[in-house]
Image 1: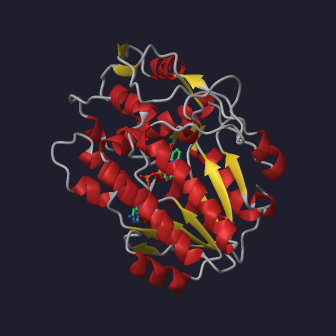
Image 2: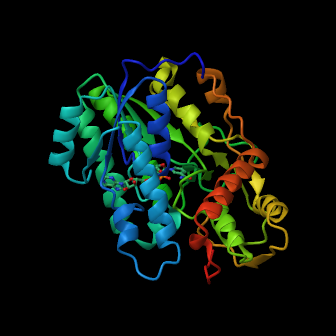
Length: 349
Ligand SMILES: NC(=O)c1ccc[n+]([C@@H]2O[C@H](COP(=O)([O-])OP(=O)(O)OC[C@H]3O[C@@H](n4cnc5c(N)ncnc54)[C@H](O)[C@@H]3O)[C@@H](O)[C@H]2O)c1
């Protein structure tokens, strides 16, 4: 990415103080872009964790989110506290910012949570998307939509390519797929140029979503055994945040990304047992327990990243054996500085 210079680019990130958004914002600014973050801070963020009671991770996650906000502040990235479900407020905010690129990240970004609460998921994921598209239409903007590998449903055969028929399972995947269709419709009707990205199973610094890898590390730091859904042979295309951010920077910078769909993952699946093995190497004595598999979770695997490699020059550099070890190192440092967050207590994966 050494040759990429984003000076002159003006990017608005809707849902930009979340896990992916703040990491992306920091990278874009380091490459010369002007970035504005729009976020309600209410979903999987400050408001959500301030109002929970009895969550053993509450103080840890509030600390992590405040660290994100400090980093944004230090990088002088403006934060607009706006609920993107409100069309009028979002519209005013975007007309003040005047971005040339809008990245739509806002969502309930978790399949299990989406299945438990379809009403809010529709609101935060689909209503916000339609509002953002409507604010962007008719102008010369580039719209980047965060879809997901969950649009494919069960993976079959070799690495899944972008042109594979989509058969999503459950609320999250269905709304992501519907979102893709809506984005394409805005292109057809209003000429809005877009890029759709399909990431998978991200992990990395300052996430509070407690997906499997994060739950493993937090449990191990507290001396609690790991809990795996299924027999551990489920394979996912685990992707380190820095690799995804690299792909997004390329999608913003390169004209070849316009009106295309890209898988943006590491490009090689690993099983849950392989991930657990890395934990056991880093935390000797930790054991793995197996629980029944969630029937609504599709059987996944590797996504093909050939299209992103050839059109954008995407080159992910962090297989799980490397990226996950870096992530564990970051958590160990955090635990050294703040041992109170990892006092042994009953936490379920
Ligand atoms: N993390 C992953 O593994 C992964 C994989 C595939 C796709 N995605 C997609 O990437 C996007 C970002 O994911 P993330 O992991 O950063 O999630 P996240 O939960 O950390 O961030 C989402 C952000 O959106 C904000 N938001 C939600 N509703 C909003 C609203 N109504 N108005 C304003 N802001 C609102 C939240 O406050 C939060 O800061 C999501 O669309 C998610 O579905 C994530």
